[in-house]
Amino acid sequence: MRKKVLSTTMAAVATLACFATAGCGAKKTPDTDQTLEIFVVDAGYGVQWAHDIAELFKQEDWVKEKYPELVVEVKSNDQKTFVQTQLSTPKVNTYDLMFGCYLYDQAGSEDIIDLTESVYNQKVPGEDILFKDKMETACLEELAYFNPNNPDADESYWYVPWQGGIQGIVYNADLLKEFGFDHEPYTTDELYEMCVAIKKAHRKVDGLETEIYPFIQSSDADYWSMYMFQTWWAQYQGIDGYNNFYRGIDDGSRSSDIFKQKGRLESLKVFEKLLKSNGNAEDTTANFVNPQSFNVKFMVAQSSLLQGHAVFHVNGDWFDNEMKEMKADIIANGGKDYTMSFCIPVISAIKDQCATIADDAELRALIKAVDENSSSLTGEGYDVSREDYDKVVEARFLANGGSGSTLGVIPSYAKGKAPAIDFLRYMATDKALGAYVNATYGTKLLFKYDVQEKNPELYANLTPAHKRIEKMYNNTLTNFTTLRYNKSFPLCGYGNVKPFVDEKYYEKFSAVGNTKTPQNFFDETIQYWDNTAWQSALARAGLN
Image: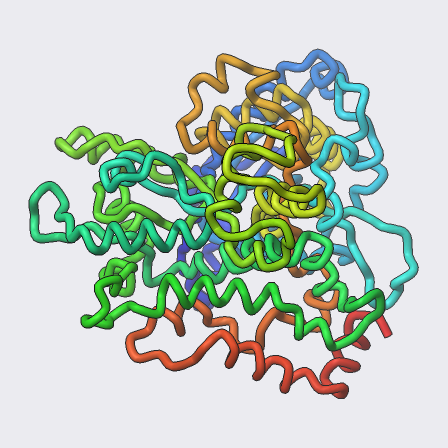
C-alpha cells in the first residue's frame, strides 16, 4: 500500500481540512440529515470503489424513497491520520462516514457510534442474511470490541472494514518459466531452490548489465516482517495455535509458555534461509535480494519488478491496482508485458509435524493435489493420514489479511447518521461487492462473495493474480481464512504482547555481516517475559 509520510508540524495540522479532493475554496457540502459526506483515505486500493458504490446506492429505489433529497459526496486524500484529526475536531468536521487507517483504538470512544444493532444485526438490503453473517468469520471475530475494564460485556462492533486484501508473494510467472519452473513454489524449500537456480543463472535483464535477482523489496516497506512472518507461523502452528498465542493460552490455560511456541521460530528460520546469504560473495546463492532494495522507495521497487529485474516480491493483492498505470507506461515505452501472479508457499517445516509426510517432495505432491481440489488421502507422489491432510489443507488456505488496519466509522456528532448507516449495510450487497472488485482491479472485501459465480463476466476480466486468489478463496475443501489483526486480541492491543521482543526480522537477516539467529530472537523473548512482565500484560488486558 501507499506509504506516505505525514508532516506533524502545526502548519500541516492546521491545513488538513483543505486536503479533500476539491481542496480549499471548494463549494461547501451542506451538512444536513439528507446529506452523506464520505471521506476515504487514498491507499493502495484507490478511492474509485467509494464513488462507484455511492452511485449504485443513490439509484436504489428504497434509498430514493427514504432520502428524497439525498446528496452524496465522496472526498479523499492520502493522509493516513486525517480521520483521527477530523474526529478530534467536531466543530470543524462535517463528514458523516469516514474510511481511514489505524482506527482500532477508537472503539468504545465518544467520537464514533456503536454499529452493533444498526448495521451488524440488520439484514443486508435486498438479501435474506444479516450483515454479520455475510462477513467472513475471521474478519467478524477481529472486529469485535473488547473492553479491558469490562471484560464480561457483550460483544459490540464499532467499525466496518473497507479493505480486505490478503498478503503473499507477487511473482513474474513468465520469468519463472524461463528459469525452468512451470508452477508457483508450493513450499518454502521449493522457493529456496528456485532462488538458487535464478541466482546461479546470472541472467541479465534484456542483455543489459543489470542482473535478474530472485527478490526485490524496498527501503521503506518491510513487507516480509509485516506479512509473511505471520503466515508461515500460522501455517506451522495451525490457526488455533496462532490465535492461542495472542490469547495467552498454552495447553488450555493462560501461561507465559506461549513464548516457547515453535511456529514463530520456524517462520524466522525461513527468513534466515532466504536472506542470510545477502552480501556473501563466496556463496553462489548470495544476494537473493536485489541490492537496490535497500535504497529505493516501494514504488520504484515495484516498478523494477514489472520490468523484469526480479522474480519475486512480497506484497499484497492490491499490487495490480496500485501498479496498473505504471505497467501501462512501461509497456507504452517498449517494455515487456510480463504476466504477474500471486502465491503463498507452505512452510516446509510443517512436515515435521506430520507423521505420514516423508519429505518435501511428498509435501509438494500433496499441495499440488489440494490445489486441484482433491480430497483423496492417496495420490501421485503422496500417501498421508487424514490428520496430516487436514493440517496441510488448513495451511494452504490461510493468509495474512489487512482489514483490521483500514476501518470505516461514523462520527457520533454526524448529522447524516441514517444514510451513513444504510450505506455501510449496502456495502455488503452483492451489487456493491461486485463494484468493489471491479473498481479495485480484482480485490475484494471480506464478505462471502464468489466473483466467478455471481459475476462471470467480471471474473473473466480479472488479472491472473486475482484469478489465482479467487481460486484460493473459493476452493471446495475448506473455508479460506484470513488471520486476525493482532491488535484485535486484548493481550496484544492492551498488553503489548508481541511474537518477539525484537521485531526487525527482515532488517537483521538481510544485513551484511548479521550474526543474530532465529534462536537468538527466540531465547531473548523467553528471557524478557518473566512472571512480573507476564502478569503486568495480563492486568493491562483485563485477563487476570
